[in-house]
Image 1 (cartoon, rainbow, N blue to C red):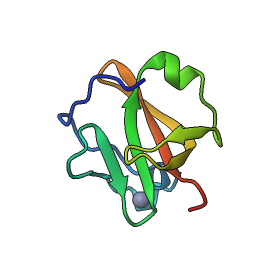
Image 2 (cartoon, protein in one colour):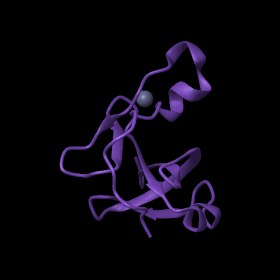
Image 3 (cartoon, rainbow, N blue to C red):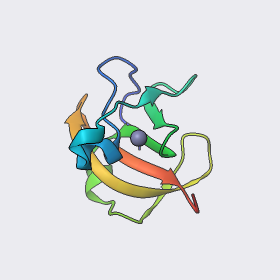
Image 4 (tube, rainbow, N blue to C red):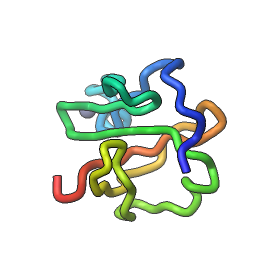
Length: 93
Ligand SMILES: [Zn+2]
């Protein structure tokens, strides 16, 4: 289940940037998808899910994409807006 969709708040850092301090960059909001961000450079997406959902997910688990496609969990990010930021990418990408 998704947390309350909100487009407010700072754009999250790209997960790739988080692990490479010299390449920190922020993700951009996805048009028409409140509370979803993307990094087109790394084909990475992020959205806020509630804590219970986040706790039940691990790296590599299937995760339904915002566009209805099949996604895969990459990692958990910071807590925000009462949920947890979850990074994911399209399956096979
Ligand atoms: Zn990136």
